[in-house]
Length: 155
Image (cartoon, rainbow, N blue to C red):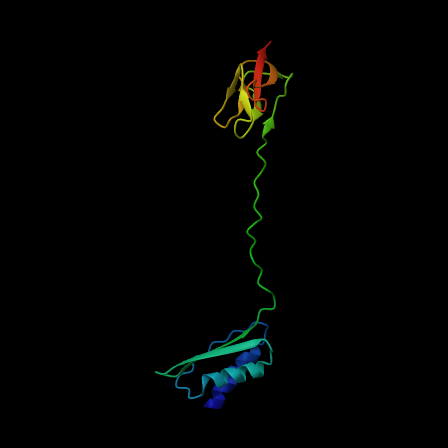
């Protein structure tokens, strides 16, 4: 009986002698030690990277044998980077001295880098737009020279 089980296991192991082979056996009422069976299968397969493990239960001796080769490629990790969004196309659209139609966008910005002046409105996203047709004029606040103010002088 022992030789019959061993012959079946070795025949299957030889058939699956690929880099990664996996075998699972269920032998009922087998008196053979499962660890010995696993060692014999690995030695017959001849692969240095093959491994086997067995588990047995006592009710009816059930033997699970797994012959598995080691990975030939290292597992590749996932990168936490690699995402980017499109540019938002912010900035001055109509410069000082240029003509602007009523309703045209003068400046697209995040925050109030530029402040609205005469005939200029500001949208919810701080976009400055012309309320009237005219020529764009850019000045600075007298109280804070870093603040830019955009005006429209009507024609």
